Length: 343
Image (cartoon, rainbow, N blue to C red; front, top):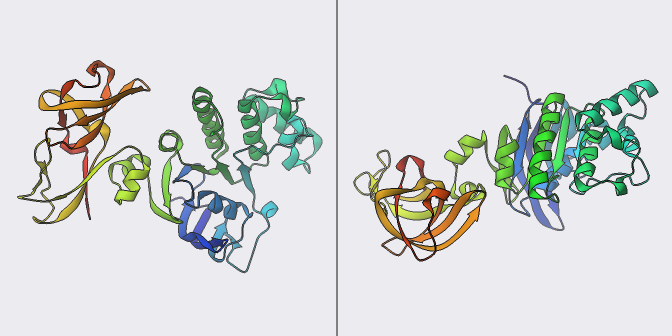
């Protein structure tokens, strides 16, 4: 098994009298992108800043490349950690050209090697023609690429990205996200990307770490975390969700769509039933549901429907299910896409 290049154990930090990190454990592996996903105020950016050396822990340990970086006593200065950081606002030096920004972290390199590295990186992200431009002359997407290759220039073991695509429009965000992750994986660095966008996390990450109220509440491969959430909180962090409490009766859970099998749960147990919108599908012999609201998003119909028992359900339907508000459509639930968690 590959050893982690970064290990965080029981990291704790208070700011303004409030606990921001509450015993965080996390590992980063070379060549893998880890997405740190959570709502605003979860502690994501504080954790990133602690890894970079911009915040000191109160207690706990950060170990990088076999050396203690921070344990509440020992503190390795940021410039000695070998970490590249891409900030949300890019933080480019306005008085330096693109080449000057990219080469800033490798100023001590021989001039020929430094220029070769700048040229290589600018070619990789397709902005070699902007080498002598200044940040104010660049678009948002171009600034993002400069910030990325500036972080990559010294060949760091670890890259930290703090919501680097949040200020870009959707089309450009998707394009640059793919380009960025390709460049990072080719570099062999371990990457940690802070985001509050579940779609972005799924599209970019090899590993997913869910954070809530200062704690990492679940880690794993994105598909595993999505299909097997550790808690209702974890499930809600990953997107739209239908959730309701129910009691298991005769190894099944009652629902408007018929009984849902629960063979491994003891009768009488109260559980949370979690149903993703895509688990509800159109079926000719399904139950009749009234469409209460409907929007088109990314080529899909996002609907809220009322079942015969007056319960409301979020559905994600194909465009072929063309319908409109007030109509009745027949829907069924795929039991294989239902998660059951203890209350």
